[in-house]
Length: 197
Image (cartoon, rainbow, N blue to C red):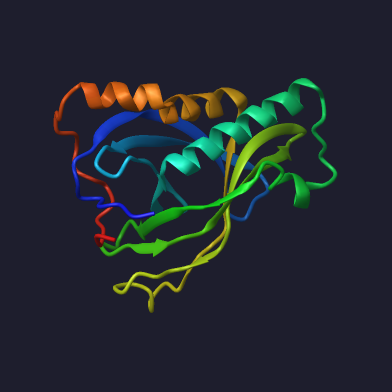
């Protein structure tokens, strides 16, 4: 996957997800901002958590994998097939893809670049099931910051069904096609400064 984060993009909507609190087993909600890069056919989900800014980039293959995983999760939910006893298996119950993530701290201007595995599954938190995307630890391949911050640590994005439906609606090809039909009205400048890949 490749993307020029300085290229033209559309504002594509907003969503929400939960993240683990620092030094706690609890989770807390954070907003996600979506953008669409039509030249690369990439959707970016940006958020701020744990003193870092993150940008998760989703190509068509990965968006399709997310939506298919969500469909399977909702089927299991409806059929009461979810279990809290085998989280090592259920966190990747619905497949895995390779993603692209860029990040930097609030104080830094140069970003890290990683290609982590993204696992689709679910977790139970406070006796409630959440559809989840588990971003696995990955090396920082940035030529600028790779020696300073060598690793992107593990992270989990937890979604209620309604929250996941909002992300799936952003990923929907019809929604992205409608953005293209608006014409190239400039959106806000990128929040993540990036090396062009």
